[in-house]
Image (cartoon, rainbow, N blue to C red; front, top):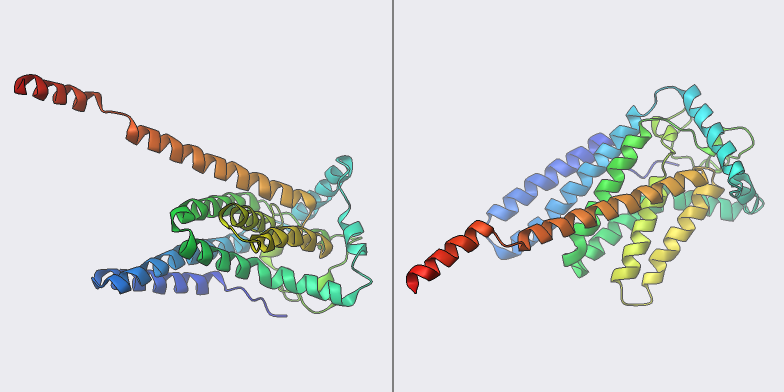
Length: 278
């Protein structure tokens, strides 16, 4: 199964083309073209973030032995915390080939496609909230990238777990160890899915918003049953998302408060003018 994702070079090229297109459309002076330029500019930002994410995955391999040791440590921590076993989740689907193949396909295809559809929906239907959503996404992704420079192996690379995508020829990584296979911690899959579910539920007004929440739940199950992530990967991913959203909200509130605060010097000058006028 081929990886449906673009390489970092391809994504960088797409971003450059979109950025150039946005500039040309904006300077045209035509209102209709300027509206299209906004879409192109946002597409360039997303493409740039994606390129950085892909490149960081390639650079994250600092040694496979260290990645395996960290994965074994995570498995011990999860047992100590009495978290469910990833292998136990796998056992729920391993006897059902169609369910396993569907989970593999969901892992490979829905991570990016759902996010891009969601961002388009927010941009078109909830433009006033788009900047906040995009900032939360960008901050979360960048922080996850920093953490991922310390490689951690996923469960499927350890003994006792089944590489379900490998069994059915659906692996997106190929036949050799790929760099981003060791970027399991934290789970960007889970962080993005929870972001989509949370904001879709808050912004949406119809019953269809439940689909986004279901996507988050399904993603958590899929990354476990395919042994692509540890539970702790998802927990840390969501923690990063919450921290970044809180930091963005706090910074935004502080900036708004600073802008509303009256300038003492301006007030003094206005008072002096009033005195002279009187």
